[in-house]
Image 1 (tube, rainbow, N blue to C red):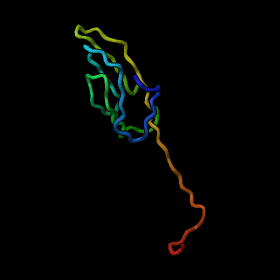
Image 2: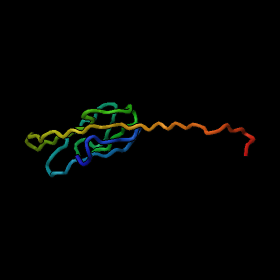
Image 3: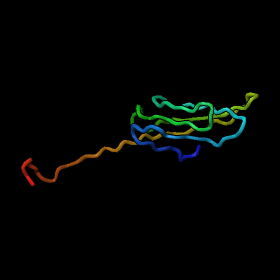
Image 4: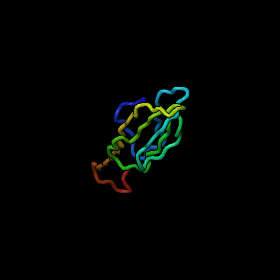
Length: 101
């Protein structure tokens, strides 16, 4: 795959793209761990929607292998996915009144 393992994805991300090198004559078989959904099955590139995934590590979140026209398979390539959530905590430094300038 063309990313560092694990791939870091922002919480509620849509449109994450994963690909393997394209070889003519091969059919690509992708698996994406739930709750991820994807488009592009059969091609060397997929687009994944992680918007329903909880923050944290998804071991083997995406994996792929390819087959040729006589059924021979490549090795499976695995990729861990880390769903990253940034929580911002704002702390007021002083009391503010509505009438204050």
